[in-house]
Image 1: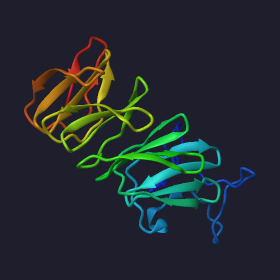
Image 2: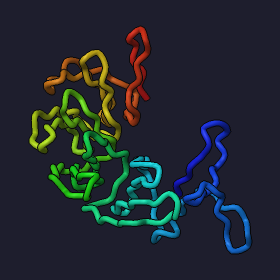
Image 3: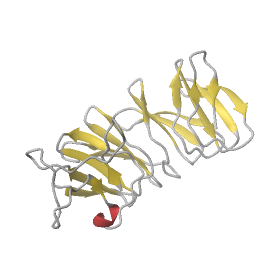
Length: 219
């Protein structure tokens, strides 16, 4: 399910009508802002919602459907079928969504009109959120590679990470840091050259973190 909660106390927000009044059910009980997947053909949500305006947000479910949600009516105003399942968050930049597809790669789609601009395939799909670095769409894949595309979907470079990857890279100090299931952490230049690699004790699932002193942490 998807909830709207208060930033003050974490309580689920009430569902309001256009006049700002709390909406009530048939038994006069106050309604809460809860979007139940069961009401949308058992939708499951792994990606964060995308805020459009006070009346609209977008959420993509695992089954490969993009739902445009009316936040007052709590209904799907539009349902767009995607090419594949979606497991990870969507990158949004300049009115375009870059959507990671579980087994198909990555697809670019406009927010206004939901026009598909392009799809770039990978052998094993994309399990993690893409990031934007120097106007390039950078993302990892279980096919052992990290990719960089321009905004037209053209490949700029690829880096072999020697194992499947299930997390997004960290961009810091003009470098990309990413771990793979080959029990390694990689330092990669912004043109795709592997500068260093460090062995870990097990698979790396998470995105590395870095502190103010430049120390990297990985899990």
